[in-house]
Image 1: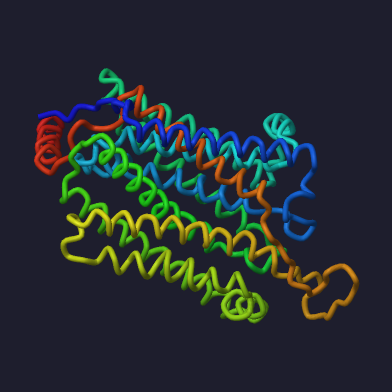
Image 2: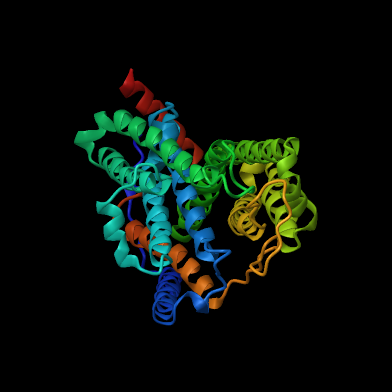
Length: 407
């Protein structure tokens, strides 16, 4: 038996309601960009001290999740998990959509989007930002080629090779994204080589959580069967990724606590940071890590779709909290301009920087999420990205057929 990819019917009221909601949020996001372009960034909560605001939280989350969303396709093509092969096209589509949504927010939050032309034609190869332009564009190209080999029957023999290139590049992409912060030696919140592997672990957890939510929503909305064994496998994998993320977060903070120069920052984040401390312990650790891990450890988790959906939602919410603590909290802690010396002036020296996101920032961030959703929703309607059946029997028979063909 061969699993067939079919388009969504896309004629139900629920589909059009979701499409209209995403389109409205996108328009509101574009309106927020227009306001910020004409009024200036004074309408935002950003300042000279906190120059990366809430839109960057959304953008970095989407870019990191885009890398991890490709993991399902990589497991099928690179690691030989043939039972996941029917989900490869959806995995690649989601990776492209999330990256486009994240880069849209990133570009529109710069204040001068037209300056992107300069960034694309004049490179400073000592800058990690310049290198990331190559990583983003390369990831887009490799995933498109990878998707082509999966969707075009004549090109199927090249899928493992394309998948290998895409897998290596997405590791490089996530490493580069983590290095954006790790290379900023001036800020105590960053300046750590551990941020690169941490971001790789984050991408696996965030990407799989988003993939599960999209898969469950699409199958439920179209009435397509989804096997318990398949969902149990994804749930166990999600639990492993969550545990790895918690491990790297623990190692990161223990490493900072080992160095005396980082003690003040750790006290700020872990104990005295106000909203940042609350978001770290309640949002990032408890709701985004411990609680979904506990939910996913049930022995019959494959049959508990609501529990899987709840845990994936918690991982996404905890991911935004973690990005907020990392990006905003890292900038809120004052710069140490002269280590070992006390500095006093009228220009915020030693003062924790305040930041409150404004409505345009929220709208721009959600606009990027809506753009990614629109891409996925329209692609599922007009192109065959979703398998017709994903019940356990169909997945097992497809896997056996694929194994026999490979033999």
